[in-house]
Each structure stands twice: as structure tokens, then as C-alpha cells.
Image (cartoon, rainbow, N blue to C red; front, side):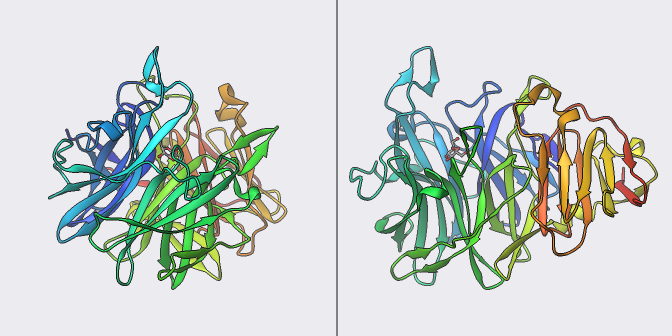
Length: 442
Ligand code: FRU
């Protein structure tokens, strides 16, 4: 199957959620993702697969992983990839439901999962034998002192100095988040080494941990469930923080302070890899309430380059994507089908309106309001703001028909929002000079 998509990778039909197994392997970027191919709602998980040579255009490949073993009979949950001796190793969580919903066997009746950690090896990153090349590497946890048998998932594997390491998200009885650390010398036999327990104000279960080093700092990005409460309702959001990790003991010390991965609060479960030039690059899932056309739901943000400077996470649009927005246009109506970019500096009270989506400055912050392009979903948050800014009030907004990414001050903060029914207009308030760029149409 080749179906090409530019700038944003969207679900090829059905439902997608988290990015998985993101890796630069044999000269190409592979991005797998949580995928339910049969409808626009979450269900028994597969791994969809897309490949890119530059992170700017993507070809959809065949489904890579699907339920085929006793331990993953009800789903192949999130995980990661590494390369070793030319082979691609995928690590993921195999799920069995304790009780299937008899009326819809794609979902569990009561959220009682049985989680195993599993792996799959592929010779070339294109062929995946779900019968021969999969196996369980960590059986469901029996000792609650270590972690939860139900909610332990999302293995992220990396090469350390003298061994391979794995971090897993887990929970202490859905009261506090927890990470588990395993170690291996051969990528197949994994030994439990240590765990770190969160305190209660950091959510009840930690999903999708991603540990990496960038600018000589150790960094952690993860997605705690119930990290904030809105109208008495717990919400799951992704946070970033500098950490220290000692390989010998597998001891991780978390920071007291964190920032959100994105201040639009729609992105979730990001995953990173290193690009061909060694930059740290990440993608994340845009949570959407509604399918744009009844056929597909879910998309990924533009791959962003992460840097950590003085403990702060900065993000910028990957240069391979940014450099495509070269053709200056006078109005948004002239934009190519893959969207446009708007750049402006906002004075006090300055604003721009992109097809009904408002971006404005309020004091020392940049704010967005999507209420006019989210009319059917007022129960979702519609107003957003950055924390107080230090580096100015410059914005670069990347506009797609269902997603707007507002990069503030070259990535001091980002606000990404899902949108519906944008009009093709871009207007600026008094005193705002706005420049619009689109892609060269060949
Ligand atoms: C995060 C998550 C992961 C899990 C996957 C299941 O969105 O809940 O923890 O592996 O989605 O689809």
C-alpha cells in the first residue's frame, strides 16, 4: 500500500493513537502507531506503520503488528524500537482482557487488563512475521511490590554504556505513578533492577515514558493519567522534566518542576528518536473528538526538534519541514492544499485570526481561542495560554485543515490545537505585520 501524506501524518482510515517504534533505520524514518483499522473508535490495538525519507512526507505501509499470540490476543499496546546488528527490534505491551465485552469483543468489559512485555524482530523493517518472530520477554507481574499486573506498559528501550535498558510506565494501585527499570545484555533476557515511585500530585498512572539525553542533559517525557483535575474530572497530559539516571542502580531522580509538552493540551504520548543528523526529534498524537469525514480520526503533529537548555525544553519545527514553507503569499486563499505558515510579532493586545482560530497576546503570554472552530465540542477546553514568556512575542503558526501548531519564540512554548471547519482566511489586528508562506506547488 502506498498512500502518501505530506507535512502531517494522518490516520489512513479507522482510529489511531500513540506513535510507537519511532526510529531512523537503514536510511529511512519508520513511525509505527496504535491503530484500530475497523472503525473510528479505540479498539483491539494493532501497530500501523508509515515510512518517510525526510520526516516531511510519509508513505503508509501494511500493518506491522497485530494480535496473534496468547499474550497479545487483545492488543499490541505502545512501545519502542532499537536497531542491533542490522535488525529492527520492536518492544511493546501484549494485552489480554480479563473479561471481553461480549457485545464488543474489541474492548474490555471492566478495564481489567493482563499486561506482558513482548518483542518482535524484523530483518528489514518492512516484513514482520507475527507468528514466528514475536515472543514474550516479561510475563505479567505477579508481585505488587514491583508493579501492577494490569497497568504496566509502554516499554522504551535504549542502549546505555554497557547494556540495554528499559523503562516501563506503571502504577501503585492507581494511586500514584511508578516507573520500572529492566536491564539486558542480549535484548532478549530482561532482569528487573529498580523502580521509582511518584508522589500523589503527579498523577495516578504513568504512561509512555521516554528517557533520552540531549545537550548533555538527561530528560524525561511522560504522560501521567489524572495529572490535573478540571471540574472534578481527572485529565491525562504529557509533561517534560530534566532527570538524573544512574545506570548502575537504575536509579532515576525526578525534578520537582515540570512543563507541559504542549500548552494546547491536545497532544499526548509523544515519542522521540534521533534523526539522520543526530538531533532529538519527537512526534505526538493529536487527540480529536470528531472524525473530519467519518472515515478516520487521529493525526500526528509535525516532527519537532527538542533541545533542553538550562532545564527548559525548547521545540522547533523540524528543518526538513520548515524549509518547505518558502512561497510568500498575500492571502491564505492562495495556500497550497498542505497548508500554510504565518509569522508575526504580537504587540500588547495584538491578534491574528486564522480561519476563525484566534491567536492573541495578553500581557506576557500568548493565548489561543478555538471556540469558533470547535463549535460542537464546547465541553473540551477552548482557551489556552503559554506561561509567562521570556524571549519575546514572536509566533510561527503552521495551519492544516484540522490542526494548528503555534510555535512561540522559536519554541520557548508551543500551543497545538485540533480545529474543525476553518475558513481559508487569515486576518491581523491593528499594528500586526503578518507574513504568510506556503509550499511550492510542483
Ligand atoms: C496512551 C495509551 C498507552 C497504551 C495505549 C493503548 O494513550 O493508553 O499507555 O499503550 O495508549 O492504545
